Image (cartoon, rainbow, N blue to C red):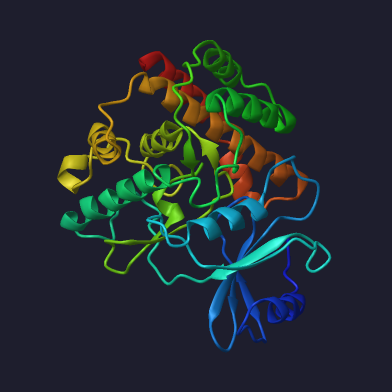
Length: 341
């Protein structure tokens, strides 16, 4: 059941007035994936689009920023970072009850399992190599040329992010999790010095947030830019490896225990090395901090998902509660990453 029903008549009227060539009637199908901003496929007689909206209700400050999603994807058009074409942003909440934007519907393949069982063994390293290439391209975006130089504050990204997500976590906290409290304390005490690197970061870079060509070799679009900002590149890289450390299957969507060599999948170190080559880096020191940070931030995000599910504002309440139950695991694994270095 869709707790955020979409007024397709209102969408059709607004889109007809603001998007050249748009013509109704409109039918909407909600995508079941995603826990933050409800997303719909819009079908019209001429073509299909995608609408992504901010959920209605009381929301955490700075969350669900569809206007930022629209801005960054518009700015990336024509760069080496593949994104869907943006059509229009509506910030008038009176139209459908919350802000939204409309973009192209990209006809591509989506992989929700990094083992890539849909692909032949020889195709898997190609797809993950493309994932690596696009990540490096995001971090190499020319901020001045794209107009994104003011897309986020400057200064120590990790200090800012730890403060932000600790505050968000506390605002959505439903119980005391000792490992999460310990992880927050450890991150505070082990913050690396600011090395001056500032780039565009995606904030939720995973293979299931990408659309590939039907042969699996080229990325057609990177999706879900809600957490994007200016920051430090190793946060995105660590987030990829954090995801891979999880158990395989629909819940973990990871590579833990997988014989990667036999399956044609790169090791963590091989992925890091390929990224460093693409960006002209000699290596990354203290990667354990960045990995621990990735676990911490994901735990905070999932706690917010749980809180929205309990409050009745989640896109998929049942799934939200299932994801919220994973917060203690992410906190525990973050502490382990910190100890392992």
